[in-house]
Image (cartoon, rainbow, N blue to C red):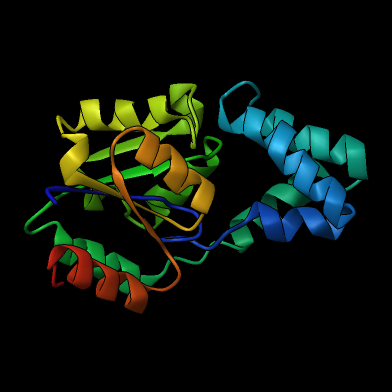
Length: 191
């Protein structure tokens, strides 16, 4: 492997929407809302403000309160950050995330995440989202990387299907310890 691409939410940062949305809507409604409306926001088809206004209209929860809850749930995994810092010494490292802006950019700036990556692609800025293989292909192009020597690390199995369709390998993220073991066993990467 020469290129290692990380997902953001669920790997480096805590998941947010799956914990906020069910507080305000039935679980099945929350899943469908994430699949449709949040996905549109992830694609940049609606702004962050429009997303929170849509949730407010649907649930009655004030948009400002929802936004504050999203920011309050942010937890950066320091162990994963240390792993990325170690990997950067030998490998090209990218970040490929489905996210709305400015939220994800604010979080990355506050926690100095940008410094960890050679390339960062945010779905709302690119008009593409995982698991669309074209999104991974764009990442590889921006990084001047070859799919056959690149691996995607993601906590969502569906996103790994998209990565594989683009020719990349994939590792399902479950914990930092397991990721280190997977990298060592599959690619002899020790970090």
